[in-house]
Length: 617
Image (spheres, rainbow, N blue to C red):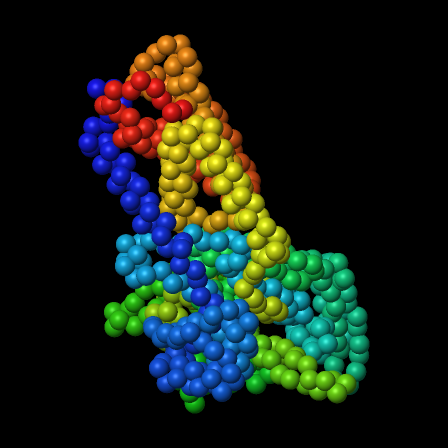
Protein backbone atom coordinates (compact mmCIF):
# COMPACT_ATOMS: atom_id res chain seq x y z
CA UNK A 1 0.00 0.00 0.00
CA UNK A 2 1.34 3.45 -0.95
CA UNK A 3 2.54 5.88 1.72
CA UNK A 4 2.49 3.48 4.64
CA UNK A 5 5.58 2.70 6.73
CA UNK A 6 5.80 -0.71 8.39
CA UNK A 7 5.29 -0.66 12.14
CA UNK A 8 8.97 -1.31 12.90
CA UNK A 9 10.07 1.74 10.93
CA UNK A 10 7.58 4.02 12.73
CA UNK A 11 8.69 2.64 16.08
CA UNK A 12 12.35 3.13 15.16
CA UNK A 13 11.76 6.78 14.22
CA UNK A 14 9.77 7.28 17.43
CA UNK A 15 12.56 5.74 19.53
CA UNK A 16 15.16 8.01 17.92
CA UNK A 17 13.04 11.08 18.65
CA UNK A 18 12.33 10.03 22.26
CA UNK A 19 16.03 9.42 22.92
CA UNK A 20 16.82 12.78 21.32
CA UNK A 21 14.28 14.53 23.56
CA UNK A 22 15.83 12.90 26.66
CA UNK A 23 19.41 13.86 25.77
CA UNK A 24 18.35 17.38 24.75
CA UNK A 25 16.46 17.90 28.04
CA UNK A 26 19.53 18.86 30.18
CA UNK A 27 19.92 22.02 28.10
CA UNK A 28 16.74 23.34 29.70
CA UNK A 29 18.39 23.30 33.16
CA UNK A 30 20.58 26.44 33.46
CA UNK A 31 23.88 26.18 35.35
CA UNK A 32 24.39 27.77 38.77
CA UNK A 33 27.09 30.33 39.51
CA UNK A 34 29.43 28.60 41.94
CA UNK A 35 32.68 28.85 43.87
CA UNK A 36 34.77 25.70 44.18
CA UNK A 37 37.23 25.17 47.04
CA UNK A 38 39.93 22.50 47.19
CA UNK A 39 43.15 22.05 49.15
CA UNK A 40 46.55 22.68 47.57
CA UNK A 41 47.83 19.52 49.30
CA UNK A 42 46.43 16.36 50.83
CA UNK A 43 46.76 17.86 54.31
CA UNK A 44 44.29 20.64 53.47
CA UNK A 45 40.99 18.88 52.92
CA UNK A 46 37.60 20.51 52.62
CA UNK A 47 35.40 18.87 55.24
CA UNK A 48 31.95 19.61 56.65
CA UNK A 49 33.42 21.80 59.41
CA UNK A 50 35.11 24.05 56.85
CA UNK A 51 31.91 24.26 54.79
CA UNK A 52 29.94 25.31 57.88
CA UNK A 53 32.55 27.95 58.65
CA UNK A 54 32.28 29.34 55.11
CA UNK A 55 28.48 29.38 55.35
CA UNK A 56 28.72 31.45 58.54
CA UNK A 57 31.22 33.85 56.93
CA UNK A 58 28.94 34.36 53.92
CA UNK A 59 25.89 34.91 56.12
CA UNK A 60 27.72 37.47 58.24
CA UNK A 61 28.88 39.28 55.10
CA UNK A 62 25.31 39.40 53.77
CA UNK A 63 26.05 37.21 50.75
CA UNK A 64 23.14 34.90 49.89
CA UNK A 65 23.92 31.41 48.66
CA UNK A 66 21.61 28.73 47.26
CA UNK A 67 23.29 25.60 48.60
CA UNK A 68 26.61 24.02 49.53
CA UNK A 69 28.12 20.62 48.71
CA UNK A 70 31.12 18.68 49.98
CA UNK A 71 32.62 15.58 48.36
CA UNK A 72 36.03 13.96 47.80
CA UNK A 73 37.98 16.60 49.64
CA UNK A 74 36.50 19.61 47.81
CA UNK A 75 33.54 21.90 48.33
CA UNK A 76 31.08 23.72 46.07
CA UNK A 77 28.99 26.76 46.98
CA UNK A 78 26.16 27.75 44.63
CA UNK A 79 24.84 31.30 44.10
CA UNK A 80 21.95 32.92 42.27
CA UNK A 81 23.96 35.44 40.25
CA UNK A 82 27.49 36.37 39.22
CA UNK A 83 27.65 39.36 41.58
CA UNK A 84 27.17 37.16 44.67
CA UNK A 85 29.60 34.62 43.19
CA UNK A 86 32.40 37.18 42.75
CA UNK A 87 31.89 38.70 46.22
CA UNK A 88 31.91 35.23 47.79
CA UNK A 89 35.07 34.22 45.92
CA UNK A 90 36.98 37.25 47.21
CA UNK A 91 35.76 36.67 50.77
CA UNK A 92 36.60 32.94 50.79
CA UNK A 93 40.05 33.50 49.25
CA UNK A 94 40.85 36.05 51.99
CA UNK A 95 39.64 33.74 54.75
CA UNK A 96 41.44 30.57 53.59
CA UNK A 97 44.71 32.06 52.36
CA UNK A 98 47.23 30.26 50.17
CA UNK A 99 46.57 26.74 51.48
CA UNK A 100 43.42 26.35 49.39
CA UNK A 101 42.51 26.88 45.73
CA UNK A 102 39.39 29.04 45.39
CA UNK A 103 38.06 29.05 41.84
CA UNK A 104 35.03 30.35 39.98
CA UNK A 105 32.84 27.68 38.41
CA UNK A 106 29.54 27.01 36.70
CA UNK A 107 27.82 24.06 38.38
CA UNK A 108 25.31 21.90 36.47
CA UNK A 109 21.75 21.51 37.69
CA UNK A 110 20.90 18.48 35.56
CA UNK A 111 18.67 16.01 37.48
CA UNK A 112 20.43 12.92 38.77
CA UNK A 113 18.39 10.53 36.64
CA UNK A 114 19.55 12.28 33.47
CA UNK A 115 23.16 12.36 34.64
CA UNK A 116 22.97 8.65 35.46
CA UNK A 117 22.38 7.82 31.78
CA UNK A 118 25.13 10.15 30.61
CA UNK A 119 22.89 13.04 29.56
CA UNK A 120 24.35 16.50 29.99
CA UNK A 121 23.96 19.97 28.50
CA UNK A 122 25.94 21.32 25.59
CA UNK A 123 29.09 23.15 26.58
CA UNK A 124 28.84 26.83 25.76
CA UNK A 125 31.81 28.70 24.36
CA UNK A 126 33.31 31.69 26.08
CA UNK A 127 31.30 34.01 23.83
CA UNK A 128 28.08 32.47 25.22
CA UNK A 129 28.99 32.37 28.95
CA UNK A 130 30.25 29.12 30.21
CA UNK A 131 34.00 29.08 30.70
CA UNK A 132 36.91 30.28 32.77
CA UNK A 133 39.44 32.90 31.75
CA UNK A 134 42.94 32.95 33.23
CA UNK A 135 45.54 35.63 32.54
CA UNK A 136 48.99 34.37 33.52
CA UNK A 137 52.25 36.27 33.82
CA UNK A 138 55.63 34.66 33.16
CA UNK A 139 58.33 35.61 35.68
CA UNK A 140 61.07 36.83 33.30
CA UNK A 141 63.57 37.48 36.10
CA UNK A 142 63.25 33.87 37.22
CA UNK A 143 63.63 32.67 33.62
CA UNK A 144 66.97 34.45 33.31
CA UNK A 145 67.98 33.41 36.83
CA UNK A 146 67.32 29.72 36.10
CA UNK A 147 69.42 29.91 32.95
CA UNK A 148 72.24 31.51 34.93
CA UNK A 149 72.07 28.61 37.40
CA UNK A 150 72.58 26.25 34.47
CA UNK A 151 75.56 28.33 33.33
CA UNK A 152 77.09 27.95 36.81
CA UNK A 153 77.20 24.16 36.34
CA UNK A 154 78.43 24.50 32.74
CA UNK A 155 81.26 26.84 33.77
CA UNK A 156 82.39 24.46 36.52
CA UNK A 157 82.43 21.57 34.05
CA UNK A 158 84.42 23.56 31.48
CA UNK A 159 87.02 24.66 34.04
CA UNK A 160 87.39 21.17 35.48
CA UNK A 161 87.80 19.63 32.03
CA UNK A 162 90.60 22.12 31.23
CA UNK A 163 92.16 21.62 34.69
CA UNK A 164 91.82 25.31 35.55
CA UNK A 165 91.48 25.48 39.31
CA UNK A 166 88.89 27.89 40.67
CA UNK A 167 87.83 28.72 44.18
CA UNK A 168 84.18 29.55 43.70
CA UNK A 169 81.49 30.09 41.04
CA UNK A 170 78.49 32.07 42.27
CA UNK A 171 75.23 33.47 40.95
CA UNK A 172 75.04 36.97 42.47
CA UNK A 173 71.86 38.72 43.51
CA UNK A 174 72.40 41.47 40.92
CA UNK A 175 72.07 38.96 38.06
CA UNK A 176 75.78 38.43 37.40
CA UNK A 177 78.00 35.40 37.73
CA UNK A 178 81.29 35.64 39.60
CA UNK A 179 84.21 33.21 39.29
CA UNK A 180 87.05 33.53 41.83
CA UNK A 181 90.60 32.30 41.16
CA UNK A 182 93.74 32.12 43.23
CA UNK A 183 95.93 33.72 40.55
CA UNK A 184 95.57 36.23 37.73
CA UNK A 185 97.28 33.84 35.30
CA UNK A 186 94.66 31.11 35.74
CA UNK A 187 91.95 33.77 35.69
CA UNK A 188 93.16 35.04 32.29
CA UNK A 189 93.28 31.50 30.87
CA UNK A 190 89.74 30.89 32.08
CA UNK A 191 88.60 34.19 30.55
CA UNK A 192 89.93 33.14 27.15
CA UNK A 193 88.28 29.72 27.47
CA UNK A 194 84.88 31.11 28.44
CA UNK A 195 84.96 33.78 25.70
CA UNK A 196 85.67 31.06 23.15
CA UNK A 197 82.98 28.66 24.36
CA UNK A 198 80.32 31.14 25.51
CA UNK A 199 79.99 33.99 22.98
CA UNK A 200 76.86 35.14 24.82
CA UNK A 201 78.98 36.23 27.82
CA UNK A 202 80.17 39.76 28.55
CA UNK A 203 83.21 39.22 30.82
CA UNK A 204 84.93 41.75 33.08
CA UNK A 205 87.93 41.20 35.36
CA UNK A 206 88.67 42.50 38.84
CA UNK A 207 91.56 41.96 41.24
CA UNK A 208 91.24 42.45 44.98
CA UNK A 209 92.57 41.09 48.24
CA UNK A 210 89.86 38.43 48.15
CA UNK A 211 91.15 36.97 44.91
CA UNK A 212 91.12 37.38 41.13
CA UNK A 213 87.58 37.58 39.76
CA UNK A 214 85.70 37.17 36.50
CA UNK A 215 82.30 38.89 36.44
CA UNK A 216 79.95 37.60 33.75
CA UNK A 217 76.88 39.30 32.29
CA UNK A 218 74.64 38.08 29.48
CA UNK A 219 74.22 40.10 26.29
CA UNK A 220 70.91 41.90 25.74
CA UNK A 221 70.20 39.65 22.78
CA UNK A 222 70.76 36.53 24.88
CA UNK A 223 68.46 37.81 27.64
CA UNK A 224 65.79 38.57 25.04
CA UNK A 225 66.15 35.06 23.57
CA UNK A 226 65.87 33.47 27.03
CA UNK A 227 62.71 35.44 27.81
CA UNK A 228 61.16 34.63 24.43
CA UNK A 229 62.00 30.95 24.87
CA UNK A 230 60.47 30.96 28.37
CA UNK A 231 57.13 32.25 27.06
CA UNK A 232 57.09 29.85 24.10
CA UNK A 233 58.02 26.85 26.25
CA UNK A 234 55.38 27.78 28.81
CA UNK A 235 52.82 28.06 25.99
CA UNK A 236 53.68 24.54 24.85
CA UNK A 237 53.58 23.17 28.38
CA UNK A 238 50.25 24.84 29.19
CA UNK A 239 48.72 23.49 25.97
CA UNK A 240 49.86 20.00 26.95
CA UNK A 241 48.35 20.41 30.42
CA UNK A 242 45.06 21.68 28.99
CA UNK A 243 44.97 18.71 26.59
CA UNK A 244 45.43 16.39 29.60
CA UNK A 245 42.35 18.02 31.15
CA UNK A 246 40.29 17.12 28.07
CA UNK A 247 38.80 20.60 27.60
CA UNK A 248 36.91 21.14 24.34
CA UNK A 249 38.16 23.94 22.08
CA UNK A 250 40.47 25.66 24.60
CA UNK A 251 42.39 28.84 23.86
CA UNK A 252 46.01 29.18 24.98
CA UNK A 253 47.82 32.11 23.41
CA UNK A 254 50.47 34.73 24.11
CA UNK A 255 49.47 38.25 25.07
CA UNK A 256 52.14 40.93 24.92
CA UNK A 257 55.71 40.35 26.06
CA UNK A 258 55.26 38.16 29.12
CA UNK A 259 51.61 37.16 29.52
CA UNK A 260 49.56 34.13 28.44
CA UNK A 261 45.78 33.89 28.11
CA UNK A 262 44.10 30.56 28.88
CA UNK A 263 40.38 30.20 28.17
CA UNK A 264 38.58 26.97 29.06
CA UNK A 265 35.03 26.82 27.66
CA UNK A 266 32.55 24.62 29.47
CA UNK A 267 35.00 23.62 32.21
CA UNK A 268 33.28 21.73 35.04
CA UNK A 269 36.10 21.58 37.61
CA UNK A 270 37.67 25.02 37.59
CA UNK A 271 39.53 24.34 40.84
CA UNK A 272 41.35 21.34 39.38
CA UNK A 273 42.08 23.29 36.20
CA UNK A 274 43.59 26.16 38.16
CA UNK A 275 45.62 23.81 40.35
CA UNK A 276 47.08 21.90 37.40
CA UNK A 277 47.54 24.81 34.98
CA UNK A 278 49.06 27.15 37.55
CA UNK A 279 51.25 24.63 39.31
CA UNK A 280 54.92 25.25 38.59
CA UNK A 281 56.11 22.10 40.30
CA UNK A 282 59.40 20.66 39.14
CA UNK A 283 61.92 18.15 40.38
CA UNK A 284 65.62 18.42 41.14
CA UNK A 285 67.83 15.39 41.72
CA UNK A 286 70.79 16.09 44.03
CA UNK A 287 73.31 14.06 45.97
CA UNK A 288 73.38 14.27 49.75
CA UNK A 289 76.38 16.26 50.96
CA UNK A 290 79.34 14.39 52.40
CA UNK A 291 80.41 15.15 56.01
CA UNK A 292 83.57 16.95 54.88
CA UNK A 293 81.84 19.10 52.23
CA UNK A 294 82.29 22.87 52.39
CA UNK A 295 79.20 24.66 53.66
CA UNK A 296 79.49 27.03 50.68
CA UNK A 297 78.71 24.13 48.32
CA UNK A 298 75.74 22.71 50.22
CA UNK A 299 72.18 23.66 51.17
CA UNK A 300 69.84 22.34 53.86
CA UNK A 301 66.25 21.44 52.88
CA UNK A 302 63.33 20.13 54.95
CA UNK A 303 61.44 16.95 54.16
CA UNK A 304 58.13 17.81 52.56
CA UNK A 305 56.04 15.25 54.43
CA UNK A 306 58.05 14.89 57.66
CA UNK A 307 57.99 18.09 59.75
CA UNK A 308 61.18 18.67 61.72
CA UNK A 309 63.38 16.46 59.54
CA UNK A 310 65.90 17.92 57.08
CA UNK A 311 68.96 16.92 55.07
CA UNK A 312 72.02 18.69 53.67
CA UNK A 313 72.32 18.43 49.89
CA UNK A 314 74.92 19.45 47.33
CA UNK A 315 74.15 22.61 45.38
CA UNK A 316 74.99 20.93 42.06
CA UNK A 317 71.86 19.60 40.31
CA UNK A 318 72.16 16.25 38.53
CA UNK A 319 69.00 16.59 36.40
CA UNK A 320 65.64 18.35 36.62
CA UNK A 321 62.10 17.51 35.58
CA UNK A 322 62.83 18.93 32.12
CA UNK A 323 64.85 15.75 31.42
CA UNK A 324 61.79 13.52 31.96
CA UNK A 325 60.49 11.86 28.78
CA UNK A 326 57.58 10.03 30.40
CA UNK A 327 55.97 9.68 33.82
CA UNK A 328 53.19 7.37 35.03
CA UNK A 329 51.53 7.19 38.44
CA UNK A 330 51.28 3.76 40.09
CA UNK A 331 51.58 2.02 43.48
CA UNK A 332 54.50 0.16 45.06
CA UNK A 333 54.36 -3.29 46.65
CA UNK A 334 53.06 -1.73 49.90
CA UNK A 335 50.22 0.10 48.16
CA UNK A 336 51.90 3.51 48.50
CA UNK A 337 51.71 5.98 45.58
CA UNK A 338 54.74 6.36 43.35
CA UNK A 339 55.70 7.81 39.96
CA UNK A 340 57.60 5.73 37.41
CA UNK A 341 60.06 7.99 35.57
CA UNK A 342 61.66 7.57 32.15
CA UNK A 343 64.42 10.05 31.26
CA UNK A 344 65.40 11.37 27.84
CA UNK A 345 68.80 10.49 26.35
CA UNK A 346 70.67 13.41 27.86
CA UNK A 347 69.07 12.94 31.28
CA UNK A 348 69.87 9.22 31.28
CA UNK A 349 73.52 9.90 30.44
CA UNK A 350 73.89 12.50 33.17
CA UNK A 351 72.17 10.28 35.77
CA UNK A 352 74.37 7.32 34.82
CA UNK A 353 77.59 9.38 34.90
CA UNK A 354 76.90 10.79 38.37
CA UNK A 355 75.51 7.66 40.06
CA UNK A 356 78.31 5.48 38.67
CA UNK A 357 80.69 7.23 41.07
CA UNK A 358 78.20 7.58 43.93
CA UNK A 359 77.35 3.99 44.88
CA UNK A 360 76.18 3.75 48.52
CA UNK A 361 75.66 7.52 48.69
CA UNK A 362 72.17 8.89 49.07
CA UNK A 363 70.35 10.87 46.35
CA UNK A 364 67.48 13.24 47.09
CA UNK A 365 64.45 14.06 44.97
CA UNK A 366 63.69 17.71 45.67
CA UNK A 367 60.16 18.95 44.97
CA UNK A 368 60.35 22.59 43.82
CA UNK A 369 57.23 24.74 43.65
CA UNK A 370 57.07 28.43 42.76
CA UNK A 371 54.21 30.26 44.46
CA UNK A 372 53.10 33.78 45.25
CA UNK A 373 51.28 35.38 48.15
CA UNK A 374 49.21 38.53 48.09
CA UNK A 375 49.82 41.19 50.73
CA UNK A 376 48.22 44.55 51.26
CA UNK A 377 50.33 47.70 51.46
CA UNK A 378 49.60 51.38 51.99
CA UNK A 379 50.74 53.48 49.03
CA UNK A 380 49.96 57.22 48.97
CA UNK A 381 47.24 56.72 51.56
CA UNK A 382 45.54 53.91 49.62
CA UNK A 383 45.56 50.16 50.25
CA UNK A 384 46.89 48.21 47.27
CA UNK A 385 47.50 44.52 46.80
CA UNK A 386 51.01 43.36 45.95
CA UNK A 387 52.04 39.89 44.81
CA UNK A 388 55.23 38.54 46.37
CA UNK A 389 56.69 35.47 44.62
CA UNK A 390 58.48 32.82 46.66
CA UNK A 391 59.78 29.29 46.15
CA UNK A 392 59.08 26.23 48.29
CA UNK A 393 61.55 23.33 48.16
CA UNK A 394 61.10 20.10 50.05
CA UNK A 395 62.63 16.63 49.91
CA UNK A 396 60.16 13.91 48.93
CA UNK A 397 62.66 11.07 48.71
CA UNK A 398 66.18 10.36 50.02
CA UNK A 399 67.35 6.91 49.04
CA UNK A 400 70.69 5.10 48.90
CA UNK A 401 72.09 4.47 45.41
CA UNK A 402 72.57 0.70 45.23
CA UNK A 403 73.77 0.58 41.60
CA UNK A 404 74.23 2.83 38.58
CA UNK A 405 70.91 4.38 37.55
CA UNK A 406 69.92 4.64 33.91
CA UNK A 407 66.90 6.01 32.05
CA UNK A 408 64.22 4.44 34.26
CA UNK A 409 63.56 4.58 37.99
CA UNK A 410 60.75 5.48 40.41
CA UNK A 411 59.92 8.25 42.89
CA UNK A 412 58.28 7.41 46.22
CA UNK A 413 57.40 9.43 49.32
CA UNK A 414 54.32 11.14 47.85
CA UNK A 415 51.35 12.05 50.04
CA UNK A 416 48.49 10.59 48.02
CA UNK A 417 47.46 9.03 44.73
CA UNK A 418 46.11 12.46 43.68
CA UNK A 419 49.52 14.01 44.19
CA UNK A 420 51.28 11.22 42.29
CA UNK A 421 48.79 11.55 39.40
CA UNK A 422 49.19 15.32 39.21
CA UNK A 423 53.00 15.11 39.44
CA UNK A 424 53.06 12.52 36.63
CA UNK A 425 50.76 14.75 34.55
CA UNK A 426 52.97 17.79 35.09
CA UNK A 427 56.13 15.90 34.19
CA UNK A 428 54.52 14.39 31.08
CA UNK A 429 53.30 17.78 29.94
CA UNK A 430 56.80 19.22 30.33
CA UNK A 431 58.39 21.55 32.81
CA UNK A 432 57.67 25.25 32.77
CA UNK A 433 60.67 27.22 31.63
CA UNK A 434 59.82 29.90 34.22
CA UNK A 435 57.26 30.35 37.01
CA UNK A 436 53.85 31.73 36.09
CA UNK A 437 51.46 33.67 38.30
CA UNK A 438 47.72 34.29 38.03
CA UNK A 439 47.12 37.94 37.21
CA UNK A 440 43.40 37.64 36.48
CA UNK A 441 40.75 34.95 36.80
CA UNK A 442 37.09 35.28 35.90
CA UNK A 443 34.15 33.54 34.40
CA UNK A 444 33.67 34.94 30.95
CA UNK A 445 30.43 36.51 29.80
CA UNK A 446 29.54 37.12 26.14
CA UNK A 447 32.66 38.51 24.49
CA UNK A 448 30.54 40.58 22.12
CA UNK A 449 28.40 42.00 24.88
CA UNK A 450 25.32 40.61 26.59
CA UNK A 451 23.03 42.93 24.63
CA UNK A 452 24.43 41.79 21.28
CA UNK A 453 24.00 38.13 22.29
CA UNK A 454 20.42 38.81 23.34
CA UNK A 455 19.69 40.55 20.05
CA UNK A 456 21.30 37.69 18.13
CA UNK A 457 19.17 35.06 19.90
CA UNK A 458 16.07 37.21 19.37
CA UNK A 459 16.81 37.49 15.65
CA UNK A 460 17.13 33.69 15.45
CA UNK A 461 13.79 33.28 17.17
CA UNK A 462 12.11 35.79 14.86
CA UNK A 463 13.66 34.16 11.78
CA UNK A 464 12.53 30.72 12.94
CA UNK A 465 9.00 32.02 13.57
CA UNK A 466 8.85 33.61 10.10
CA UNK A 467 9.95 30.35 8.48
CA UNK A 468 7.27 28.44 10.39
CA UNK A 469 4.65 31.01 9.43
CA UNK A 470 5.61 30.96 5.75
CA UNK A 471 5.52 27.17 5.56
CA UNK A 472 2.13 27.05 7.29
CA UNK A 473 0.54 29.70 5.06
CA UNK A 474 2.02 28.53 1.77
CA UNK A 475 1.82 24.74 2.15
CA UNK A 476 -1.02 24.51 4.69
CA UNK A 477 -1.30 20.98 6.11
CA UNK A 478 1.98 19.91 4.54
CA UNK A 479 3.53 23.08 5.93
CA UNK A 480 2.28 22.19 9.43
CA UNK A 481 3.85 18.73 9.13
CA UNK A 482 7.11 20.30 7.90
CA UNK A 483 7.11 22.68 10.87
CA UNK A 484 6.73 19.76 13.29
CA UNK A 485 9.64 18.00 11.56
CA UNK A 486 11.70 21.21 11.66
CA UNK A 487 11.15 21.55 15.42
CA UNK A 488 12.11 17.92 15.92
CA UNK A 489 15.23 18.57 13.84
CA UNK A 490 16.35 21.23 16.32
CA UNK A 491 15.73 18.83 19.22
CA UNK A 492 17.74 16.13 17.44
CA UNK A 493 20.55 18.57 16.63
CA UNK A 494 20.81 19.73 20.26
CA UNK A 495 20.77 16.11 21.46
CA UNK A 496 23.59 15.04 19.15
CA UNK A 497 25.67 18.09 20.09
CA UNK A 498 25.12 17.27 23.77
CA UNK A 499 26.07 13.60 23.33
CA UNK A 500 29.25 14.60 21.47
CA UNK A 501 30.08 17.15 24.22
CA UNK A 502 30.49 19.74 21.48
CA UNK A 503 31.06 23.38 22.41
CA UNK A 504 28.45 25.80 21.11
CA UNK A 505 29.75 29.24 20.12
CA UNK A 506 28.21 32.22 18.40
CA UNK A 507 29.38 30.94 14.97
CA UNK A 508 27.79 27.63 15.99
CA UNK A 509 24.45 29.40 16.34
CA UNK A 510 24.97 30.68 12.79
CA UNK A 511 25.42 27.05 11.77
CA UNK A 512 22.08 26.19 13.41
CA UNK A 513 20.34 29.00 11.51
CA UNK A 514 21.84 27.73 8.26
CA UNK A 515 20.69 24.20 9.15
CA UNK A 516 17.12 25.44 9.64
CA UNK A 517 17.19 26.99 6.18
CA UNK A 518 18.58 23.83 4.59
CA UNK A 519 16.00 21.62 6.35
CA UNK A 520 13.18 23.84 5.05
CA UNK A 521 14.78 23.82 1.60
CA UNK A 522 14.56 20.01 1.50
CA UNK A 523 10.87 20.10 2.40
CA UNK A 524 10.22 22.79 -0.21
CA UNK A 525 11.83 20.58 -2.90
CA UNK A 526 9.61 17.64 -1.90
CA UNK A 527 6.40 19.67 -1.70
CA UNK A 528 7.01 21.43 -5.01
CA UNK A 529 7.65 18.06 -6.64
CA UNK A 530 4.31 16.79 -5.24
CA UNK A 531 2.52 19.86 -6.62
CA UNK A 532 4.15 19.32 -10.01
CA UNK A 533 3.00 15.69 -10.13
CA UNK A 534 -0.54 16.73 -9.19
CA UNK A 535 -0.58 19.26 -12.05
CA UNK A 536 0.47 16.47 -14.41
CA UNK A 537 -2.68 14.58 -13.41
CA UNK A 538 -1.19 12.02 -11.09
CA UNK A 539 -3.47 10.74 -8.27
CA UNK A 540 -2.77 12.26 -4.81
CA UNK A 541 -1.32 9.09 -3.23
CA UNK A 542 0.94 8.48 -6.25
CA UNK A 543 1.97 12.17 -6.29
CA UNK A 544 3.03 11.98 -2.64
CA UNK A 545 5.06 8.82 -3.30
CA UNK A 546 6.67 10.26 -6.45
CA UNK A 547 7.40 13.61 -4.79
CA UNK A 548 9.41 12.04 -1.97
CA UNK A 549 11.10 9.47 -4.22
CA UNK A 550 12.18 11.85 -6.99
CA UNK A 551 13.39 14.65 -4.67
CA UNK A 552 15.80 12.35 -2.85
CA UNK A 553 18.59 12.67 -5.43
CA UNK A 554 18.52 16.46 -5.43
CA UNK A 555 18.42 16.62 -1.61
CA UNK A 556 21.33 14.20 -1.26
CA UNK A 557 23.47 16.05 -3.83
CA UNK A 558 22.88 19.43 -2.16
CA UNK A 559 23.55 18.17 1.37
CA UNK A 560 26.61 16.05 0.52
CA UNK A 561 28.39 18.96 -1.19
CA UNK A 562 27.67 21.19 1.80
CA UNK A 563 28.85 18.44 4.17
CA UNK A 564 32.15 18.17 2.27
CA UNK A 565 32.64 21.93 2.62
CA UNK A 566 31.96 21.67 6.37
CA UNK A 567 34.49 18.83 6.74
CA UNK A 568 37.14 20.94 4.96
CA UNK A 569 36.37 23.87 7.26
CA UNK A 570 36.80 21.63 10.30
CA UNK A 571 40.07 20.15 9.02
CA UNK A 572 41.68 23.46 8.12
CA UNK A 573 40.00 25.93 10.46
CA UNK A 574 40.61 26.78 14.11
CA UNK A 575 38.52 27.95 17.07
CA UNK A 576 35.19 29.51 16.01
CA UNK A 577 35.53 28.17 12.45
CA UNK A 578 35.67 24.61 13.80
CA UNK A 579 32.63 25.32 15.99
CA UNK A 580 30.68 26.48 12.94
CA UNK A 581 31.80 23.42 10.94
CA UNK A 582 30.79 20.95 13.67
CA UNK A 583 27.33 22.48 14.10
CA UNK A 584 26.79 22.64 10.35
CA UNK A 585 27.90 19.03 9.81
CA UNK A 586 25.64 17.68 12.56
CA UNK A 587 22.79 19.87 11.33
CA UNK A 588 23.08 18.54 7.77
CA UNK A 589 22.82 14.94 8.97
CA UNK A 590 19.87 15.60 11.31
CA UNK A 591 18.02 17.69 8.69
CA UNK A 592 18.32 14.89 6.13
CA UNK A 593 16.85 12.48 8.69
CA UNK A 594 13.92 14.73 9.60
CA UNK A 595 13.23 16.09 6.10
CA UNK A 596 13.18 12.67 4.46
CA UNK A 597 12.13 10.16 7.14
CA UNK A 598 10.29 12.15 9.83
CA UNK A 599 8.33 14.35 7.41
CA UNK A 600 7.45 11.26 5.33
CA UNK A 601 6.33 9.42 8.48
CA UNK A 602 4.07 12.35 9.46
CA UNK A 603 2.60 12.57 5.94
CA UNK A 604 2.00 8.82 5.96
CA UNK A 605 0.21 9.02 9.31
CA UNK A 606 -1.94 11.87 8.02
CA UNK A 607 -2.71 10.68 4.47
CA UNK A 608 -1.47 7.11 4.11
CA UNK A 609 -4.05 4.39 3.28
CA UNK A 610 -6.81 6.93 2.65
CA UNK A 611 -8.78 7.61 -0.49
CA UNK A 612 -7.90 11.18 -1.45
CA UNK A 613 -9.45 13.45 -4.05
CA UNK A 614 -7.17 16.42 -3.37
CA UNK A 615 -4.22 17.46 -1.20
CA UNK A 616 -3.81 20.54 0.99
CA UNK A 617 -0.40 21.49 -0.36
